[in-house]
Image 1 (spheres, rainbow, N blue to C red):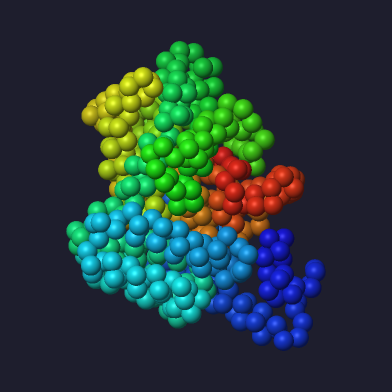
Image 2 (cartoon, rainbow, N blue to C red; image 1 turned 90 degrees about the vertical axis):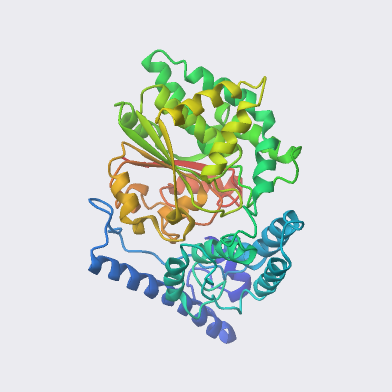
Length: 476
């Protein structure tokens, strides 16, 4: 239905046939050729992976379901098209990176960023080039990925590839790995955390009260409440909604609304809810759990509240927090952001967060929490392509919580699955129980019933990308 709406004005679809008439047939053939090309490239990569036996261990192989075609960015009217043809250049490169860092950029970096912006203005014509040898340890790995899309443009290569590539190119242009500039999104992250102040007190009340749970019933209720809090915290995505200033009213309002979702109408905005399934898995208590982080700012605070409760309640003996190895997607959390958030909240006198921050410092000092960075989380590879160093670790996990939309896209390989394809079937490659907490911000989905999809589309025509709806998906 989405594809028909988006492409109808461009290709003149005939309802129900998928055919076009007259002079647009060549454009349609070209469009489908690009999709077949991307599918062949990915199938070739997966066939090579199978032949080489590249699995992280038991259960971490490749999906057994036939892979649908990948999502591209060349359909006018789609979120992917708007992102790669306009948003990344106008709103992120120019509006954030070049503006926020104007005083700190070298002349050479400033010119590289201008040239990059001119390249993105021709996104439909410019083919993807290799990453330059800029001092990053990931250059060879990135160029191996890009070699599979030789000759494709910013719009005709898979969206997940081009979007992650965009952020890697920002670091190249800024001279990040050469030490010319620090985190180009630091100002956005700082403002994002400061602007969520209105939501800190109610969140601290929930988190501190939950950690004082005494009965099994209280532990269950508080676990589910903090799980949903972590889910709706994902609405705070600075790549979509930038925090302009520390007093940004809109960012503060979104943080407050995220709390309101938990307290009030979250059930109506959930298109899938496996919370009970997750509880039955974690309630056995003990062992290590893992949490793959998404955004810094308010979302990170909600994630730390969940991780705090897991160890304080005894549901887990340890939580490993998986963070990005370098800046990506504006607000994605690195280790420095985790530690910096704890330091800032320790100073938030009168909110109750200073009490929580003191516990969090203790978790790190006593080994109940561990923060691990890895370059894999900064790449466009599907999660079934995790390297052995990660899969071997996760196979010992009682539960892996995966946060956010970008991680969810990689969980699904950024493929155009039918929306009612069971999440458990798509995620059968996991070697440990997994729970994905995601608010809908992109046009890829699974595990949503036709009834819920129909309801959401009637309530909100942009339900796939608005951030209003969410899912708690699990495979246990």
